[in-house]
Image 1 (cartoon, one colour):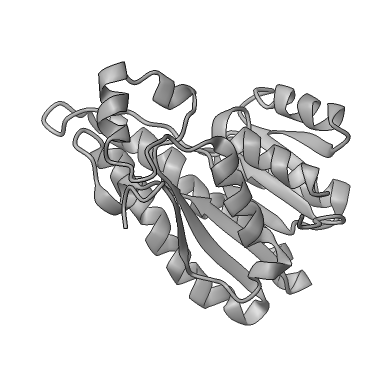
Image 2 (cartoon, helix red, strand yellow; image 1 turned 45 degrees about the vertical axis):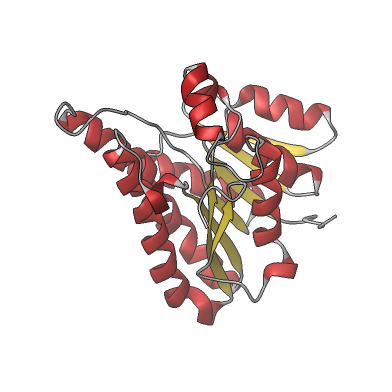
Length: 246
């Protein structure tokens, strides 16, 4: 198992689902995790990590607010002196057909899923450049690669993360900072459980491996990209989708 002892990781959207599992897996491998979410929503994540013997801080942060993001990173640097890993995971969905989609549905999804990655990444780049090392991982989606009716805003935000990460990977490679993307497929989370049974069956029928993914499937991919073993991997998209898109 990869050892992240001495490493400090910030995980956004860490209150539940994929973000919570990423935080737990990084902590289980020795990282000191800053679990970031609105208000104290990630408190349960921190408590679970600490109960398992891991190290974690609660990071109260609204990723759509630049001042809140910079306060989160400044607080992390003040407490720990470094940031080694950033996982841009925060995301929302506001699904609607284009003919009915409100401008606010578009703006909120882009702000939370895409612009927040810019804000969080810009905040950690300076300390990472100074220490000449870092891992930045963005959580996109299979929808950003293949599209899906009723999710033009979500697909645009997730596709944007891929272009953002590839451009940034070129900028930061000379400073020993890697930037990669994980694109989950249909993962068993609260969000997918809210989909109708028929819709779940329809989606699952498109997955060659014949099952929904788990949050752990995504988290171990993130841990790999954050590890020393992935030091020669940057600007790449790692699909965790059971073969749904290939």
